Structures are given as structure tokens and as C-alpha cells.
Length: 248
Image (cartoon, rainbow, N blue to C red; front, side, top):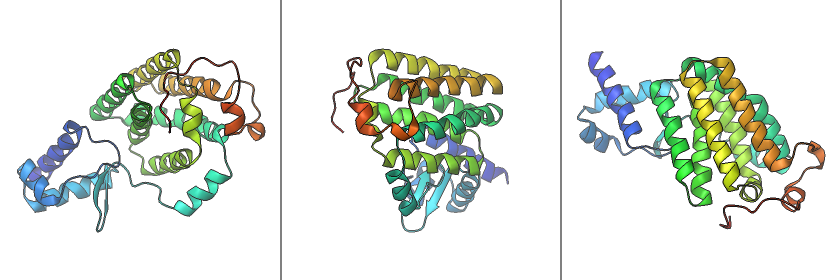
């Protein structure tokens, strides 16, 4: 049993030190055994333990991936993305993600918290839109993952899959300014500090404040969900100059 615990720790540290993003593929078993200095039996036991905790997932013929198994009903995602809009996505996020932060304050490990800090650091350093968006999304996934609740993680992944399938990018890129980047960074660190301090109430409030700020920045404070579309929001006049000019 002790060797399996050691193998699991070695594998967890490997994923952490390699700074592998969610859904990154792990090397083949033979390579992992060589790099970690463990037997294939020990590796497979460690993989099973991490999979049981939602830290990795495996697909026969494709390999082993970091993070929780993604939401894969592509037909349902496609259908939802056609019949929803950024305003509805934000409403869903406002309802779900503050609660995730609250649960994460109870169950987050030190590795989870360090990962949140790394994501925010990488987001702040990004000079291209795609890099910025990747690490921002990774931060929110890491908060969800830190609940260590497979059902909640699956719900988050389903919502996030719909978000990514909508025309969210054009709206986001048109609203990111230097000021909004600085504000977002401070809010991320407030969420991290609350989770690290095991303060459930503050973690929930910090996430709600952050998403409310994003909501108001992207959609405005006085919108009607049924009237908001990607085109009407993007064409709204009088906004600050955007920071990114990359076409997506």
C-alpha cells in the first residue's frame, strides 16, 4: 500500500511540475514509468486512484488526460449553443460558480491553490488574446476542480462546453481593456485568498463580485436576457478601446 501512495504522490507532482493544463494528454505508460521510476503496476494503481478522484480521465485508444472527463454529448451542446446567448450563459455562471468557490474553500488542496495562482499569473502575463482566455478559463476550471465533487465538476464542464460553443469570443475580445484586466486579476486573487483561508462566505462573495463585474462589463447592468444577442452587444457604441486586436 505504501508503494502505491508513493506512486500516486509522484504522479501528482509530475502533473503539477509539468504545469499541464486541463485536458492535456499524459505521456504513454512506458515513458511515465521511466520518468517516475516506478513499475507499471504501481503506475496503473496510481492512475486508478487519481481517476477515482476526478484528477485524470482515460479513454481507450486515445490515452490519459488531465482533469475531469469532459462533457461529451456534442449533439446536446450544439443544440443548446444555438438556443442560448451570452446573457443566459452569464446567468448560469452567476448561479453556479459562486457555490463552487464556496465548496472549494472547504476541500481545496495546497496543490489546487497553487494552480489557481499559476493560472492567474499566466493570465496576467498574456500578450495574446487566446493565451489570456486559456488561462482565465483554466482558473475557473481549477476552482471547480478544487471542490473534488465529480457531479459539480461535470456540471461546470457542461456549462463551460456550451459557453465555448457560443459566439462568446467576439464579445469577450471586444470588451477586454487594460483596466478590466487589472480589475479581473485583483478579483482572482481575492477568490484565491478566500479559498486558501477556508473562508466559505468570502470565497462565494468574491466569485459573485468577480462574475458580476464580468457580466456588467460584457453585457451592461440593465439588460433583458431575451433581447441581448452577440451582434447587439458587440455593436454597442461608446466603449473603451480594447486591449487585444487579434482576430478570432
